[in-house]
Image (tube, rainbow, N blue to C red):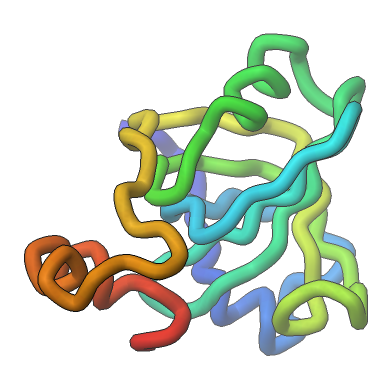
Length: 132
């Protein structure tokens, strides 16, 4: 068992952890990358937060894992909480450690799917931003 104390994203968004190092775990909700930076919006049971992963702030293998992690990959992150008006919720996590628990398969739901397909994939569709 790990002796880390896990922080809920909701606590971060209430401003209780600004400029502190936290340990967060959850699932990747959205991701985008460009060059030496990856933006991963992650969620836990309480809320969502944007995590900024920069090459050089963590090991090369962790950065490559961050680039490969898809929507619904389960991850554990360590980082420093910073206030940022551009980020969802107004706070961002500057990641110093990125650990993938499980890489997800490519997400099957993309734009303009038929209603029949969406009903067949209902267990995934209910996690979409539109439905939540």
